[in-house]
Image (tube, rainbow, N blue to C red):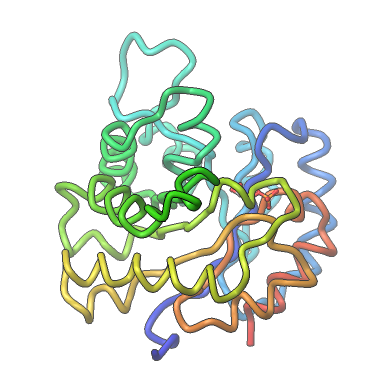
Length: 255
Ligand code: 13P
């Protein structure tokens, strides 16, 4: 597999951590550490930090993304944020369908599809999250489930828009648990995701899509995971809150 056909992307999902002042401080620390990165670097702080993050990262190699995006353009959707609002602010990315949103906020494959389409229509790159929980892994349905999640998330997404799609494979049982998928487990599912993309869009298009692994990726295990042919990057939770650790992962992806 020729990985040079696609971008390596390391994205930090800060989840519900850091207010604006802490975000500014973290970015000041991070900027010099990743300045020479050989991969794309993205941070996804809470909504209230986006303005300061965009200001702080101006003129740097760090892109900024939101952790969610609504599918309507405007209207009576209390608490939601539209894709056009994110692009107006200067965001380049939005995470869509993270397992925590599926688990705690009623996100479904259908709403993931709507959010994905809204994000790319506004010019954002959608980081579309998929992944099985422990029960599903034990039931042996991981591949079927993940393929279905990918298929539904991308319903109505044209091949021409694939450049605006990153797929993040995040096994729920590995998120925040310190229990990482082995590099072989990550590779197996990321390869299945690429096979699903090839079924939908053809092999050359599938080969151009960045597929990330996420779930307790850290400075110590990143190189092995990222060394796999279908693991093109990482979506990092806990370790993205520590600039030195995040920078080490960026370095591991920069070879
Ligand atoms: P952790 O890296 O903390 O396991 O979180 C992964 C994740 O959910 C990133 O979106």
